[in-house]
Every structure is written in structure tokens, then in C-alpha cells.
Amino acid sequence: MSVHDLRSWTHDRHRTVDDTPYGGGPGMVMKPEPWGEALDAVAPPTAEATPRLVVPTPSGRPFTQAMAAEYAARPWLVFACGRYEGIDRRVYDEAATRMPVDEVSLGDFVLAGGEVAVLVMIEAISRLVPGVLGNRESVTDDSFAPGAMESLLEGPVYTKPPVWRERAVPDVLLSGHHGAIARWRRDEALRRTAAHRPELLARLDPAALDKHDRKV
Ligand code: SAM
Image 1: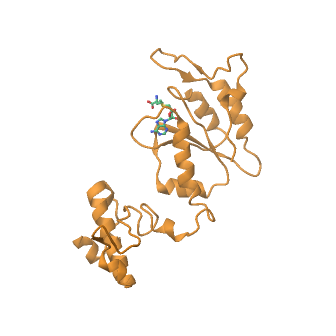
Image 2: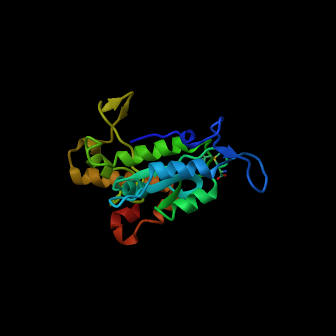
Image 3: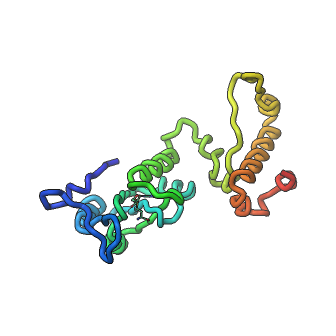
């Protein structure tokens, strides 16, 4: 992984990367020239590979676990971190003539810059790259994991000791009965999803719900 300083592609004494917005209004906009030169240098499509440009922005598509999995399978990702009011639109449009460009939001809030958003994405993506995590199965049990957890939040987890401050671990988890444990985990995931993110339940495929699921 390489990190680049956009100011390396400026040519004035102040290494300027921003200017006032056309049409007026508060704040500054990132200039197209340094971004254009930076992307030419850092993300030149080659005969062997085309990079995917990912631009964090609150006006993008929401970042999801499915996107993290898709990115984890890509050979070459380039992230363009904005500041101020964002990057001149022409940078996106020109880059899109040479490579796929994804505008991605971390959520319905506004950060000061794209760097932290990209760190979050890189962490979510890299833990899905084979070999990064010690136990691959921990990924398949996670909230949002493709398969049984696709639109579900993971329920509570426990470790030793079996009793702590008079609070006992649920008996079923100590039972050694794998079927009952799997059922309990699914019930808890359904309950937690209903409590915290009821809109996710609507995305569950009704055909994938068994009789017991419907009771929860
Ligand atoms: N004027 C922009 C708007 O209202 O959509 C907000 C710009 S924000 C102050 C500066 C930069 O922070 C953005 O260009 C983007 O890189 C990053 N950023 C802020 N909020 C973000 C979010 N929710 N998701 C991803 N990136 C974000």
C-alpha cells in the first residue's frame, strides 16, 4: 500500500490544492489540476490491470459489507481523499473515462476529510483478504456476512469465566449441543436486528426463514 501527498502535484510556491467555488458560497473546492496529475501518476491503467477509483463522499452510495467483500477481491484500488467542500466534479468525470469510479459514503454524517473514511474502508476490506485473519470462520459469523447473516446483526458473545459478578453465561452455550447453540445464535441475531435495525429484517428472503425464525 502507498500513501501520496496531493501537494506533490502542485507547481506554485504555496503548493495550493484548493480554490473558491464557482457560483459563490462558503468553503473551498479542491482544484482539478493536482488531482488530474496525481491520478495520471498513481492510477495509470495498464494492459494488465485497471485500477478502481474509490472516492469517499457523504453524497456517495453507502459502504456495505458486500462492497468490502467486492473490493477485497480487486487487485488494485486507489482511494482519493477529499477535504474542504470536496473535489472539482470534472476530476470524477475525467477519471471515469479511464477507470471505474465509485463514490462511497460511510454514513449520514459529515467528516472533515476523506482520510478517516478510507482508513475505515481499508480495515473492513483487508480483514476479508485471505490470510489476514487467523480464523476465516470469524468472518462468516459476522454481522452482514454473506449467507445466513446477510441482513442480520450478530447477537451477544461470551467468554470465560462462566459466572462473572453473578452474571452467568446462557446455559445453552455451555451445553455442547451444536444444533441448539446455532439456533440460539440465530434467535439472538433476529432479536437484535429487530431491536436495532428493523429495516434490515424487511430485506430477509422470506423463503430463507424457517418456522422457528417466524416465531422469534
Ligand atoms: N460538501 C460536502 C457535502 O456536503 O457533501 C462535504 C465535504 S466534507 C466536509 C470533506 C470530505 O470529507 C469529503 O470530500 C469526503 O472525502 C469526506 N467525507 C465527509 N463525510 C463523509 C462521509 N460520510 N463518508 C465518506 N466521506 C466523507
